[in-house]
Image (cartoon, rainbow, N blue to C red):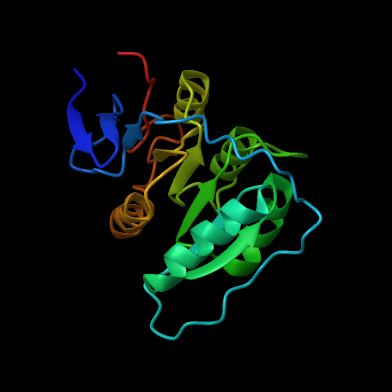
Length: 194
């Protein structure tokens, strides 16, 4: 049975099969299309200034330069160290050099989309435990396939900056529980259908 939570701009639904004690496992229904389709994949990765005493490291992946910067600035203002990437290929290249604590992914991106990126992150033993949040339109397709790919949280565009910070903090605090059986075990949702 799904439980519903009131969110800042709508209803958030806990994903079935997730630990309900982990409030970052939420899907927030979109309040607009917020697709942000303005590809800018030729931009080199933007590294934040090194922050001593940072709350944690976040890898932000979105093909829209404006969205990347918006997410980066909001997280840096809250004390996170942030690196950005323009697509999934760049994310997979940076993840081992930057060693993030959390990754945020857009879904629709050139070269390698967010769902394929999440699947590859989960297939790699070095990254399978990293918390991953999708920040996108959060269509039913994206949520269903994101859950199947091992995504931990969903945040619909457009979003409130406070909601972004809340989701990242919760993923940072709770981390991703290890999967002991090598399959779809602890911390993994089986499906978004209820």
